[in-house]
Length: 459
Image (cartoon, rainbow, N blue to C red; front, side):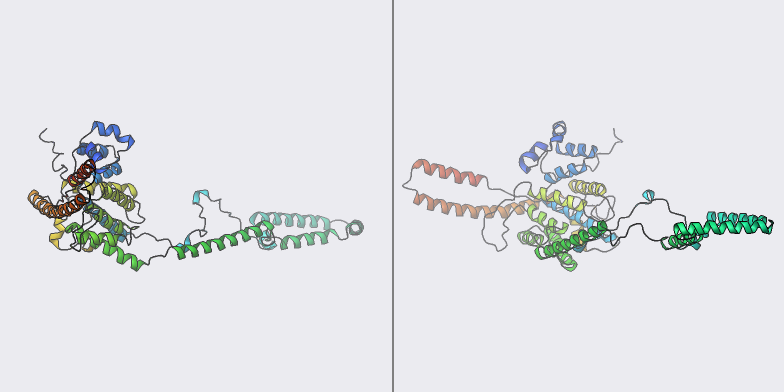
């Protein structure tokens, strides 16, 4: 219908191949087993990407897009994702774990729902504390009242009866003392004294208990082994300081941006050298992705006539997929894994549309990773018209002609070298079997036909 414009500005203009089959054949893309039927149902590259997006398989959609995207745009995609991650970490830095904390025992925090109910009973340090317990205090008062009442009734007895009572009591106490060594009153006092002494005494002696003693010895042995391990790790794997990491990542971002703006031999070689200094960091891996996207594994910086060695198919795409996963799994930041995967796919998609291009930032003369203003580029254009660009087909064709002309000049010189080598070989093989000479000639012709020609696209 005329009012449905979802397709407007939703065309992939920087894809290398039209179909999924071509990407598999030419870019070394490994089609996942579970997506074979999807690729058969949606053989066109753009339809395949949209279907994966519809299935919420954004990570797999990004993987395919990386293998089918123009290589210079591929490097820009990685740059935008790393830029987005750096700005996240500026807002919420990651908590770096020190090497000394590896294996260190940590306090076990029990959640509130799993804790035992708090004991509301007061701490008992002496018998006076026991007597002050409300229940005990009430019982004690009742006993004293009963005793006072009994004493009052006893006082009403005749004196003769009282004397007989005291006499019998003395005989009973004497017999009890003779039998047990102490009177009942003495035994009660001893019991009270013993209760007072053992009121706060623990049930188990932690220092003398063999179980806790063995536990202490085991902890000491484990700590000793842990310290030795940390010492060996520091000796074998030198740790980089924060200043060194900052310098290396800054240089890697500078070289990556310089390569994207001007993909020449010098910038490609700089990306290789600076990326190898910190390949375990997103900025270093980005720099290596830029080098792999150049297409030539032997940049001719010294203007020496060297043969071009083509980058293996899929190497740059595989590197970018590793970079996206590294950024998505990075600690800290304001986004979670799924949010980053979705953001990186949206960035790649708008780059493939031609909406997110580097020429806008070249005109501003400030690299995005050095812009500290409030309106800086975040990696995703979105609805921000200030950073939205478009591809100019004339610029693309002019740049392609320029690059191909340079490569053709290199090819001519390589042909001269091959012809000289062939002439020397013919002189040496003039006396050899004609069939052998024909075989060598065919091999040279095959190598000449398979020599690659590279193209670049400008945003």
